[in-house]
Image 1 (cartoon, protein in one colour):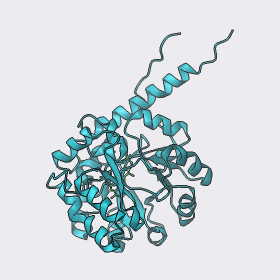
Image 2: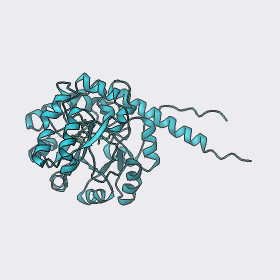
Image 3: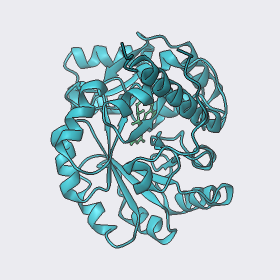
Image 4: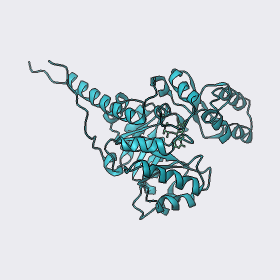
Length: 332
Ligand SMILES: Cc1cc2nc3c(=O)[nH]c(=O)nc-3n(C[C@H](O)[C@H](O)[C@H](O)COP(=O)(O)O)c2cc1C
């Protein structure tokens, strides 16, 4: 039997790609302070869905400028990602509706009031969840698409430690709307695995830090490449909002304070925006909070974001063809 040949698919049609109006069901996750116009536009122009992260741009003028810049760079649909619970976002939702943004995603707290506010605007609504219970609630609240993000993922993760491999089938069984999978997916082989488990597409975070268009200091991008499988830790568990970050000196100090029973104020004080900016803007990879997923271990270069999307599509096709080839029933 000959080895399977693969072509680069022109599109990957799933309920998620249809719901979001994109060619490939590859969504660049909101990356606080890192995902701006250049990154969002590059991912969207390549056929995925890029997003601008509101964290760090939570003022009307700043966000409007970023949205307009993205529109100048691409006519493809893109999203705007909102953290729920930390900052006031009502006025920014009005802006997003005014600007006719294609999609909005919510992470963190209860998205229901914001989804209600966007009713009738035609904006696609993506909600991040970390397991089946949250998924059901988000579906009932009116989400159009979900992204379930597992324990492997970078940034804030669920409280349950549920891994992506187990979360995908559980969440798929719990809801009837399209489900993206994230956490640990940095290439097309991971994407094929997620699709095989029933996901309708992927949400990718860590991989998109190490691309040319990401708004992050070169030291951060280099740290993604250097990081091995053991180089991330989960911090902030004691305050109920666990997040995965680079295992550096600062993360070690935070964990020490958490172990010693430090107060909520002390811990939150150590993970404020300035701690994150020390990594992203100053390139201080020791004394900062640098959100990072386990999949950093799979990343070893800094290409353009379009190339990441193209590679993922080609690798997913290769994986699918390889499996189909291996599973061919041989007539005896
Ligand atoms: C540096 C960084 C910042 C993040 N910031 C946000 C954010 O602002 N909003 C959000 O919804 N998710 C955020 N996340 C989570 C990602 O959007 C995505 O769900 C997650 O990274 C997927 O797992 P992966 O890192 O294994 O690809 C962040 C992740 C990282 C690595």
